[in-house]
Length: 335
Image 1 (cartoon, one colour):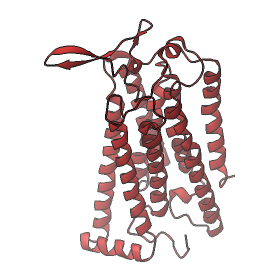
Image 2 (spheres, rainbow, N blue to C red; image 1 turned 90 degrees about the vertical axis):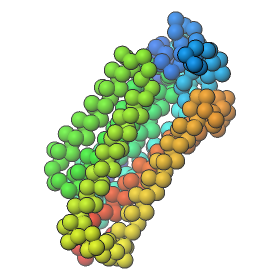
Image 3 (cartoon, rainbow, N blue to C red; image 1 turned 120 degrees about the horizontal axis):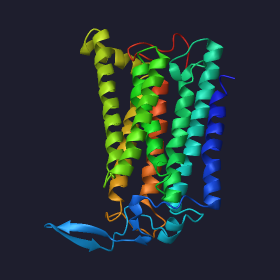
Image 4 (cartoon, rainbow, N blue to C red; image 1 turned 180 degrees about the vertical axis):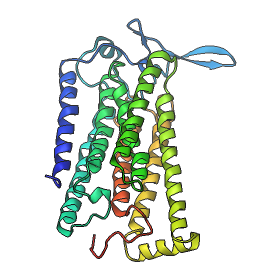
């Protein structure tokens, strides 16, 4: 069961997230327009802009729902269908990115059982943590679909939760690489994901402008992850006998083929996320790359897919690394 467990998690996860989505899309969404639609009292009011203390209407920017045009009447009445087709359907990438991760974990688990040795936690047939990442990678896309398809405030928090479910994994797993306590991973992971989701929901309910809350929370989680990675690198250097010895160890690892690819995967993940953020910011409503009626929507086609690419690259980074980067992970076996 252990090697194929990832496929079970992937399949059940798809069923749990997509079946209710399909039912809502077929029969209608909650008639509760999200704040980004600027629908008030059944009328879409124009957004205003302030210049020198004076507010002026900005009719070219009637909403802030990530650029793609939608029918405000359907949003207001809770009609069936999909409000933003490109931003919604582009999230289907997550089915394939998470399936790739599930296949790779399956083969690594099979090898770990044959060799009776696990290179790291992502190869360990007994651990459920790799399966958590399969679902996090899947939900990163499928959770976002709920918001773009409905633009309903009743369920738009799914979008934020999908990002927290994924991003919370990063610092929690980095700590788990060095602290052999699964319970600690789950406490940190679920604690961060649930707390951020609750904060996001409360902000949407009580703040006049909560648009930056989710990005702030994601930024804090990512920053925490980078700090933890830096601390781990410093700790490795100290264990190796200083910076020069650590660099020598890393050079050995690169020469033997296990560290070099990992480093490049990590760098590629950073580049992917950086590009994704650029496209996300520059394609917002009213920004230069926004064309509401175009089939090319950078938010969906680039922010979504590049974020998914980052998720796969981070997995490949973790897959290559041992729990301590100054150690040879293979113990005589080939990866």
